[in-house]
Image 1 (cartoon, rainbow, N blue to C red):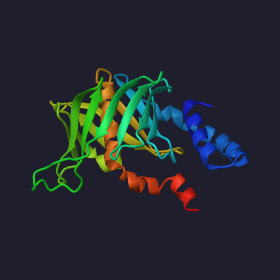
Image 2: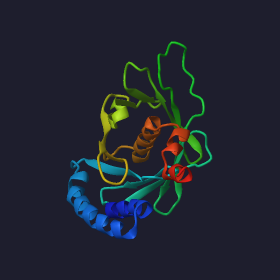
Image 3: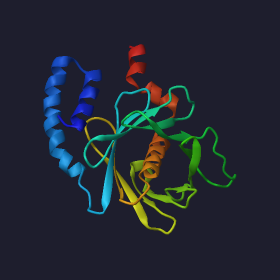
Image 4: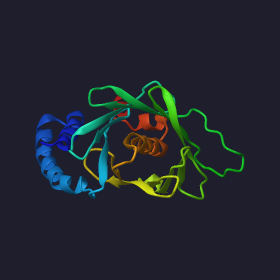
Length: 225
């Protein structure tokens, strides 16, 4: 069973009985292996990351796979924070960076934004960049280094451009069996960690509030059974 099959098994372990789980795993493993080749396809001058979010988890928990179909990064959220904070770890559980949703995001009175959100990108304890949402008239986010995110941001189909308008990366949502999954295809010379942080910030941007999220978890349903 490949790494994606293992992720699927973890979901099934939490949600169904053992006999049902074993049958489901066999079916899933065949389907997953069939889809793996297409999922990890890339152009010669590109690299890819596959970002997979674990289902039914009260904390934000994600695995990030690289071209070799192995886990390269682990993402974990904070339970206690009011806004979402996502910590990025390497395979040895060494923290590399943090994406922080700011508690307050201020805009001018006539900015015409329905959802206002700002994010700080922290590497080595220092803020290296800030991502902010723009007006409702354009589906766009801007990084303070000049990078721009355009496209169907709420539908997880968007592109990241540098300050000169050159495309750095494209992100697409993949419909799989074991949680939200995004494919990130980016230039070989791009800042991989910064690209990943943008993807994580947009995942937060599209997510419901923590209270709404909690009400949809398995834990909430069990407590109110």
